[in-house]
Length: 148
Image (cartoon, rainbow, N blue to C red; front, side, top):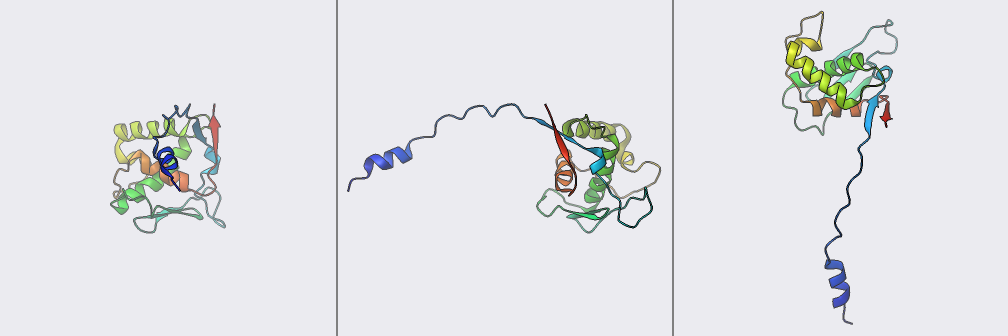
């Protein structure tokens, strides 16, 4: 049996890709980014790290094992605090991109102290916006809506 024609059909190049289309912005719901723990006083929030690839954000554990760009625990610590900063800036209308732009400009103006206002934390290393977004995407319970 001659399969030459079938082989040529399989080897034919794929048709050109069509444009992807409009990317819809995602808007995090600020009320869904919570670092409270069950049984704690109202308003009490707890953010800590469990090593290079783990953030304990209230009752949730954010696993950053697949975020290979992290090189120091001080970045992980800063990401945890950055999530609180994003939550405080979130108003239900700003997209994730806009929130990250605001975070970056605030860090440019105020430095890493912007992540922990009213208290001194001297062991932060500046994370990139991508790692902050990856952590937010991995936070269980965080809800997003789409901005059309």
